[in-house]
Image (cartoon, rainbow, N blue to C red; front, side):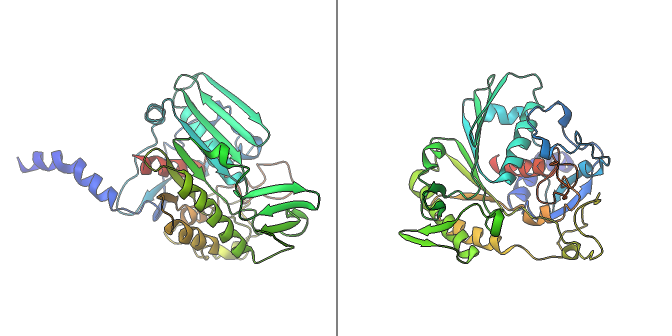
Length: 341
């Protein structure tokens, strides 16, 4: 009798443990049934992320599952997700790492109901995918800084205290997922602006971490002023790491991510956390509207094997910034899924 009663209460105990579990601390474990979907039937993967189609010969990187310490993650259930968000809209706004996550979610949903009717359009920097049988709309706003980047007579201006160009698009959704960081450190020819503006001040440059925090505070003010948490859930994707120096993970003989086929053992990463993550956490902690941080930095740092490397964009340089799809961004969305339920 005690054994039967224990079994009856086991699901409740597991749920209680999961509620007290940090999903973002753990390690990567080999799992033969992975990946959870066949990326070859997903029509939404852009070339620079489609590692298998681009000829990546090793597939071991697809066989790892994230295992938190002290609890298990529920598998991503695409049908359940589509039902939960039937007739609703989800907006992703951020840089190319957000694009990684957006395409991953599109694939996770589409491959759960292969052949479902959809319509995808792109106008400028805005992509819209509609799952017609479910009335679900996924929108991607390619918005690297979240604050306004405006071409003016003097040149392109990064306006740290304005989101006027985005607020209409961001309004009225059931789920918002934001991200920014990747472009904040670029200088010289790769820097996409000529001036930084705060109020009426025009600056040629400033401390980039201060600029980043100022922009996040502007974004946070918009969320606190315009988002009703009873109607809209807000997520923020943490800092996605790059792997361009093997010395960061105690392999100084390695130049970058090229040729890496397995994750690091974990649970900790030999290198340091990016300072931008602390800035993100500080700004989110001061907000009125609760924003759930997808704190994917450490678990992604361990995935030196999951970048496109030479099997992404058609360039001579290895891409050790973005991620293959199928691949690591599927875990980001699995974590999002678990935080929603």
